[in-house]
Structure formats: C-alpha cells, structure tokens
Image 1: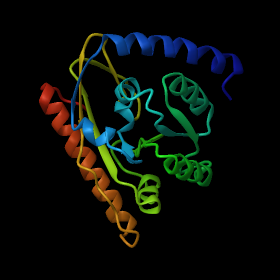
Image 2 (image 1 turned 90 degrees about the vertical axis):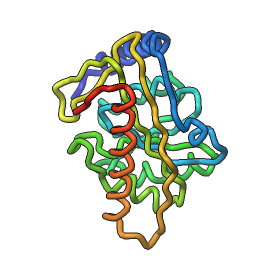
Image 3 (image 1 turned 45 degrees about the horizontal axis):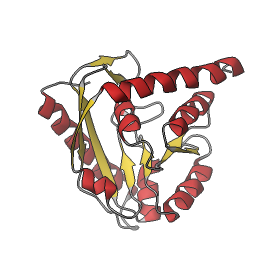
Length: 212
C-alpha cells in the first residue's frame, strides 16, 4: 500500500511540473477538427505517450478512465487539476463502474479518453475494454498519434515517454471509426490497434524520430 503522505504530496508537485512543461512545448496538430467537432467521441492513445495529450487536451472536460489503485488516485488528482474528469475503474478492477461513468459522461456530450494497452500492457496491444465501450456506446472512435522530437524514455513495461522541455510534439488525430454491435470483439480490437499503430508511425515519421 502506498502511504497517504505520498498520495498527498506527489500530485501537487507533478501538476506544477506539468504546467511548466505544457508552457514550454511546441505543439503541432493534424486533424484537430475531429476532436473539436460537436458530440461525444471515444479517444485513445498508447499508454507510453499519454503525457502530451494530458498537456494539450486539458480544460475540455474529457473523461479519462483511471484504475482504482493508489497510482490511479494520484493520476486522478493530477489530471483533474489539468481540466480532465477521472472515471475510476479498469478491465481488472471496477470495470462495470467505469462503463457506467463512461455512459453518463458521454450522455452529457463529453469525450472519453482511454489508454487501451494500460495499465500493465502488453505494450501496443489493445485490451477488450475500449472495444466493448465502442460497441456499447456506438460513439465514433478517434485514434491519437503522438511523437516528441526529444524525450526521455523510461525502462518501464511500456517504455514510457516524457517529452523534454522546449521540444516539439506532433499530434495526429485519425479518421473516426465506428463499430457494429454484432462485430466480433476481436475484430474491433484489431481495427483499433491497426488505427493506433498507423497514426503513431506517421507522427514519428513527421518528426523523423523512432519510438519503442
């Protein structure tokens, strides 16, 4: 169990650094109108690239699915300071609660964001949760590609990427996808995974970088 002191101290320090980092980055975007279009949508980014979207897409009231662990509590405190809404639950804990939160948040006209390979991987492999949500809600799905010109890559399961201050971050918001309710869940997962791979490879290529 993580100490309460750590849970209380880490989020304010992290939020302060995130605000500094956000102010220092040069953001470039392709397809932003797809995010800004009226109506709720499902958004997805790979777990190791989630920092830049947190910085860029704050203050839009986007709901973010966060696990019910102590780590999830710290993440929720940070993202809510940056303008997001934490929806607690995951495929392993509190999944039904998360789905109910997703449906309520979407009914209010807000977007929902996922890290479909989180919180523990495997890296770049889509789990059933987002596929089920896409079918259950009928909402359009938008894959988000993210690349940073300079970054720190951590030795974690996902090779987590933290953009360096004053670097350039390229976003690509992919074409919206929709899924039929009778489509096989494995097919939905494969389509989501292929779309995410494509937009992230394009984002990397636009900055001339490679990523794990």
